[in-house]
Image: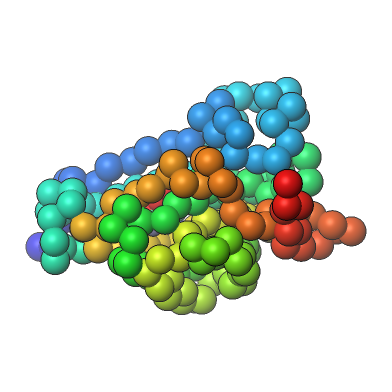
Length: 185
Ligand code: PAN
Ligand code: ZN
C-alpha cells in the first residue's frame, strides 16, 4: 500500500503525513492591490487551501514534495483571488504544476520583474524553471485545482514578493482577464 492517495478527479491528497493549510482573506494583507476593499470584505472568506506531502525533512537535498492547491473563485475589486506567490529560497530550484479542474493563470516573474502568464486549464502541465517567482489566479466561476511537485531543498521566499510584488497583476478588464503592468514609481 502506498502511503498517500491522490483522488484523481478532485486532485485531493489523503493519507498519513498529508498536511492542510488554509488562507483566509484576513491572512492576505497587502496581497491584493485594493487593500481597502479587501478589508471591507468577509475576513473569514476562504481564498485558497494547500495540501502538502513532505516525506523528508524540509531543506534536505534530493527529496521531492507533492502538493494540491485549491483556489476559490472571486475577486477583490477587479483582481482575481490568487496565491501569495514566491521565489524559492534556494533560488535555482524548479517545480511542476498541473491543472486538475477549473480555469486560471500561472503568473510568472523573473528576477528583473518581467512578468508573464501561462493559462491553466484541466490537463495543462507547467514547468516552472528555477529563479522564477510563481503565483496562481483563479479566473473562472468554479474552484481552480492544481497539483504540484517541488524539491525538498527549495523553501519558500515570501518576503521578496511582500516587498516588491510582481511586475503585473491579473485584473478583470472589460469582463476578461488581463495582465496589468504595475506603474513604476
Ligand atoms: C505551491 C504553493 C501553493 C500556495 O505548493 O506553495 O500553491 O501558494 P503560496 O505558497 O504562494 O501561498 C508551491 O509553489 N510550492 O513550492
Ligand atoms: Zn513553489
